[in-house]
Image: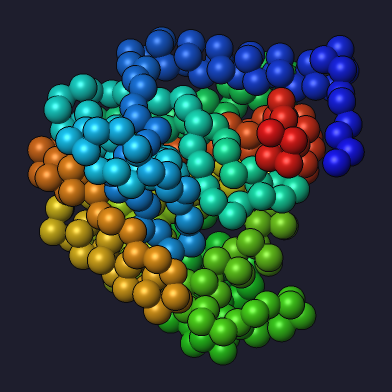
Length: 326
């Protein structure tokens, strides 16, 4: 096997590591000034993420049988344990740490990456949008940059970008703008086609020097967000983009354990239909949800933000060692 050794003195790598360290310091100062507590939660848990489009790594514990569940799952985000802390009364909190997603390796993805996730008690997703924008603007300002901010509802974004109402359009209408894209369409559901429209037709047109915020998603894409019963109903969820890159995904958090269980079970049904393995539900989270205070939370990908700051499309440029070299 041929291995290329990059000297630590390589200026590009040193610059990337210094940039990461500076961003971590900025994040911690940002939240310290706002009284948001930094916490640390387990990376290995007894339950996984049921989301069909996210695959978890699992491993086996070989110690004492009374130590707990033997099969353990590497977290895809710190969301579930953070919400358990919220239910115990921890208050506003954040975590800056590593997460893991199986199968996601390529020019823009690494199976191991860093996520910043935080929660604000008594806030809704609209208020959290403002703070998320402030954090991204602060990171840009540290580089002598800034970005204009544009907001769309999910419905308006699709109407203006591809002339489609994502809530009412037929499946054929969703597929038509993607006719020239090579897609293995078997087994794809309506939300999969909406995601493909977003990633292949809408995101690439977002200007690099603009923060784009998209709110009010279809209820089928609520995940762990509340649903507001407008006409049509919408998920109280937002995504924030810097240029064409999705940086953050936030929710006005669902606290209804029965509804959350039903969503997890629907995820596992979808997994069965796709031939994927079902994932054990996080019963500790479901038990904690009724005690969780009303809040909003958001997860932000640190590597994505570093890529935007460095103006690179390669995630390897912001890592000490990418997956292939780990």
